[in-house]
Image 1 (spheres, rainbow, N blue to C red):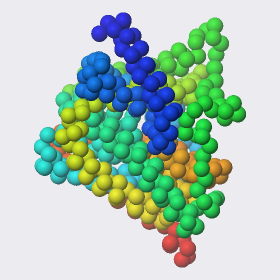
Image 2 (cartoon, rainbow, N blue to C red; image 1 turned 120 degrees about the horizontal axis):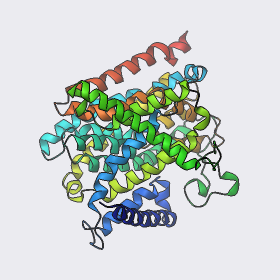
Image 3 (cartoon, rainbow, N blue to C red; image 1 turned 45 degrees about the horizontal axis):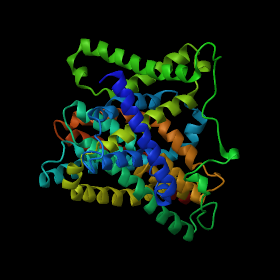
Image 4 (cartoon, rainbow, N blue to C red; image 1 turned 30 degrees about the vertical axis):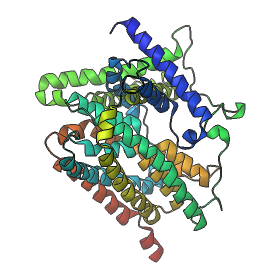
Amino acid sequence: MTIRQLLNMMCELSMFMLLGFFVREFIKPLQKLFLSSSLIGGVLMLIAGQQGLGLLTVPKALNSLPGVLIDLVVVSLIFGVSFNKKNIHSYLDYVCLPMPTYGMQMCVGVLLGAFLKKIWPGLPTGWGVMGVFSFSGGHGTAAAAAASFDKLGIEGNMAVGMVLSTVGLIVAMVVGMVIVNYGVRKGWASYVKEPQSQPDYFYGGALPAEERKLTGTTVTTGISINHLAFQCAWLLAALFIGRQIFSVLNMLTPAFKVLPSVLHGIVGGAVAWKLIEVFHLEKFVDLKTIKMLSGFFLELVIFSAMATLNLKFISNYALALTIYSVVLIALTVPLVMFCARRFAKEEWFEKGVMAFGAAAGNTSTGLALVRAIDPPSQSHAGDSHSIYGALMGWKGAFVGLTPLWLTSGVALTAGVGAAIFIIFLVIGFVFFDTKRTLKS
């Protein structure tokens, strides 16, 4: 593909992303389900393309875009992560809410996937692990895992991941609001007596002037370097460092050659940030802009993944995906709420709602559910989840490792998932069991 062809493709992509935005603006239910403009725009291009109405040809190069850009997205998972010891100690109980669920989804997901593959042999190898990345990760994490499978020569998991992630978003909001209303009626909510509706701008449309927040802060004069270019350079440099590290490792031992490239971003982000801290260069980094750039690349990943979905594959395995989704979500709801009530010392319902929203959809759906029962943001549910994300950043390695493990069977991945489930339940019962605290 030439640079001109790349530009033409991006122009076409941008038109459909804008179309997705305006469709979302006019069809309000899409906003309430937290379906993003990039997701809707990608579906619209899919419908207009050769698999649908045949009005245009979706470029073949768009298929490879998620696998390339996701390496940049994962850099920000680790890049800029710092720990506040006081906050970590205060919010550790929350970690025992989503982590048992994460382990359960990994273990049950791969086992259920292997079982369903016996009924539908055409399902991709290791597809069952996509549940934990789709439900507890979202479209971006699912795309990263699917890209890892693709680089191992296993195709089809991108379609699985996009479908499951979309189902997760819808379930998170629909089931989540049922949980919210039931919990408020039972008197579990700490701050409201009935769920609060959010202002229209929360879901879409133009933000009022007083609600508009800065997306970044310039760190040096524009005469020296454009701020956006500077921050993008940090992001790309981190990925470059990761690639160089793996290049050296590849020369030392062939074992590293089979590791997926998403690990380059994770390792590169961690090493680059440590170097920045060692040389006291933090003053030149604007993490808000870094996250904004990562979000931009993620929008492109989601759009291109949706626009290139294999509709024949999805139609062939719709029943398998439905069974899989129902089983995992049915197990997720009671497990999260049990852990919340048993391990969260304060605001257990708010934290449980946050954990469920994030374990079925993504962080945004979790925050949206919490806002329905905590409009002034008095609870620590959002803060707790942020600290959890920093503490459990090592989970990102599974995105690259589990596809590799699953090429030789499900035992290792299922065992790791079961271990995570058991270990964090034990930690919860030993250190945070509220029933034991009450008795004493």
